[in-house]
Length: 321
Image 1 (cartoon, rainbow, N blue to C red):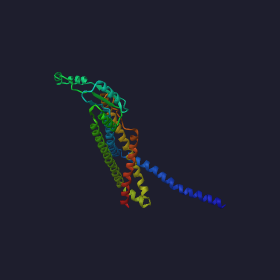
Image 2 (cartoon, rainbow, N blue to C red):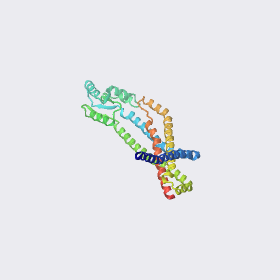
Image 3 (cartoon, rainbow, N blue to C red):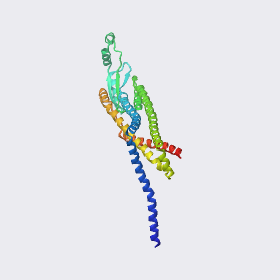
């Protein structure tokens, strides 16, 4: 008998605990749906708010896309550019061939081409203003040149080591390298990446402030209704829940708009960037925004909208009490 009563008491206590949980879930569902209906009840204002936030969040994505393709352009122009090793005058052809074979066997070298002094003279003769001057020379003063093509995808540090090794070889007079240009490009890209991060933080703050101000205006317009709810015993969490979902909807929809705008920008750049790639014989690999970044933008924007709504609603409700 006692065990049966205990079971009844346990069942009653479980039902009493389950009612608050069910009520909490029901209110969350109602708040999400009600806040979405309220947004669509004023379509023009909602559209303007979402559009402003979406464009603000799309700007860092556009700059990120630009920097990524500039990096690819730097890889195509800088890291795969041939190095020119000028040999000391008076080198014999056999010695030059042996030196070229030694360099060609390196793992970080893709190709080595030997340019003879006569080939260099012919190239100078074809240039405007040098033809007649070349005929006045009794001897050919030009040295042998080894044109060394680094292995594709070789990093800037590895190319620098290759240049140092070439300069240290016996018989090499000097090595012409675009390493300084690559370092400057990398430095500029580093500055650009930092600017994108700062810009993203500033625009994210601006988007959060837009949501906060929208929630502030909404709460102010319903101050009497909120006061009545709090007088009859509604908690602050209960009152602010619809506004939190409104912030989430604003952020989520603006993130979708930002991803869509970024895709439009990417599509608009396809044709000119493809022509640029063809101009560099396909060495320029054009990249787009990664799918994970496009998927993460709406989620991050929703969190940002929730945070702005949470801070502003807490402040407004604290003033109302």
